[in-house]
Length: 449
Image (cartoon, rainbow, N blue to C red; front, top):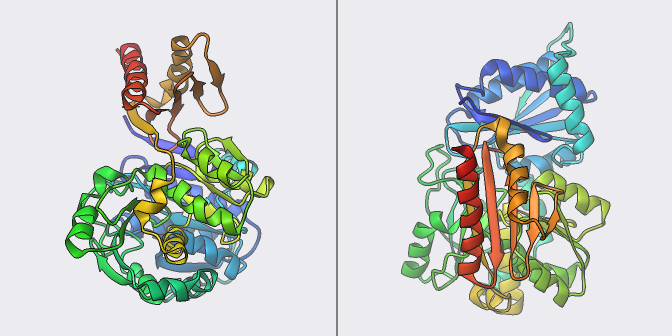
C-alpha cells in the first residue's frame, strides 16, 4: 500500500514510494503558481531525505519566478516567524513532524506565517490536480539566498517576549532531547540566552532518530533518567521540527503530552486572558484551567491549521491540543516549542514553583489513545460505521465522531497525516477509558476482517 496523505496544509508520505522528486516539483510548482510575486522561504528538519526534497522544491519555486531564501535545517516555528520578518510571499517547511524517519512532507505556509487556511489549501490542491503551473520564461534566473544562522533574529525576539531575568535568577538545570531533529544544537543557544544549565541528549541534527520523533511518555525514558541522575529541575522532549513538546517533572515523572497545554494555559491566561482554542481530541483538563480563569474553551477540528484559524477568528488567547503543540496569540500564530519551553520556565521562576506543583493543581483524567492501520479509501466509511456502537449518545461529527457519554468521551477520526483511524477516550476512571477504546478497536478490526 503506497501511502500519500494530502491535506489542506501540505502533503506527506514515505520517501521513494510516494514522496518523489516529481511529486515535490509538482506540489512546489502549484504553491509557486498560487503565491503572489515575492520571496519564498524554504527550510527543513534533519531527515536524510530533506536535502533531496529541498532541492526539488527550490527548483520548482525558481521556475515560477520566485526568489528563494534557503534556511537549511531550521525549526518550523522559526521559519514561520521569519516569513513575517522578511515580508515573504510564503514558505515551505520540509518536515514530517512526528512521523518516522522514512517519511517526509511539504508543509505550506502563507504570508502571515500560518499554515494554509481552508480556502488557500483548496486553491493549492486545485492547481496541483489541474497541473496548470505558471512556469516563467525567465530572462534572468531568480536568486537563491543561503541564510546563515537564521535562528538568531528569532531567539533575539523571543528573549524579549519572555521574562529572561527571572528565569536566569532561578538558575534552572534543564534536560532536553531534541531527537537529533531541527532543534538539535539550537537548544544550546536558547537555554544559554535564558541563563539555564543545559543537559542535552540526542543533540546533533543528524537525522538519526533514536526513538519515534513524537513527544510522548514512551519516548521520554532517557530524559527522565537524566533528570533523576543530574538533579535537574525538569526535562523537555521535542518532535523533529521543534513545534511540539512533552514535559518531565523534577521527580522524573514523564507527563502525557496532554499536560503541555493546561500547564502553559494555567500561567499564560493570568497575563493574557481570552478564549482557549483546542481540538475535540484534547483532554478535559483544559476546561478546568479555563474555568479557573473565567474564559471559554472553543473546540474545533484536530490540527494546527484549524486551531490557528479559529484562534484568529475568535480573538483567542492561545490554541493547542493534546499533541504537545501550543500557539500563543501575542507571540506568533504557530505551534512553537521554544516559546512553550520558555513560558514553562517563566511560570516556574515567577511563581517559584516546581513543575510537579504546577501539575498538581490540574485535575487528572485518564486518557487512552490507540490507532488502527486502515486502507485510505476506507478510512471515513469505517469511522462512520462506529456510530452504530452509540445509538443513543450525543455525537459531534465536526471531525469524525466525538461521542459524549455520562462518565467518558470517545473520539474516532481518520488521521490527516497517516492511513490510520485514531481512537481516543477519556474518563476519570482508567479502566473505563480503556474499555471504550477496546470496544471501538474490536469493532473496527471485525470490519477490516
